[in-house]
Amino acid sequence: MGVSDCLFCKIIKGEIPSTKVYEDEFVLAFLDISPVAPAHILIVPKLHIVSASDISEENSIYAAKCFEAIAKIAVSEGLDSGFRVITNSGTDGAQSVFHLHFHLLGGKQFDVRLV
Ligand code: AMP
Image 1 (cartoon, helix red, strand yellow):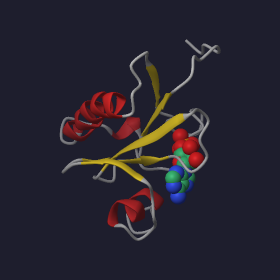
Image 2: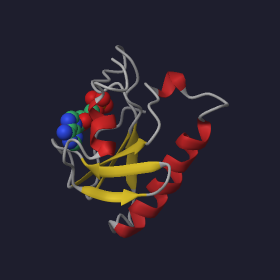
Image 3: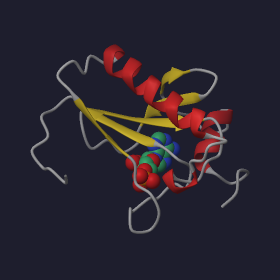
């Protein structure tokens, strides 16, 4: 799947609607359409990077900016007592949208630990 048929590229371009939570030059963050926690926000780089496997020296500023955004969003969303950040990568990671994104999950105490 390339940039032209990428769901998150279309959301970034405004061709598909989203509920925006945060935006800057590098990052768009919006509500996940199928939330699994009271707060479930997707943080997406504005560059089409397929997955965590594709972060490189050339594009890693976008990943860094995603994490700067996460820190800001955690404050603006009132996630004072903590949160989780998850990225699914590739087939074994159960990634379903092949544009790098970070799930920011919060608003509840998580009882299941994967790690
Ligand atoms: P992943 O399975 O880690 O690739 O995550 C993809 C996420 O995108 C899932 O949590 C979906 O619920 C979410 N999603 C899919 N389509 C949309 C959409 N149009 N707007 C917001 N979130 C979406």
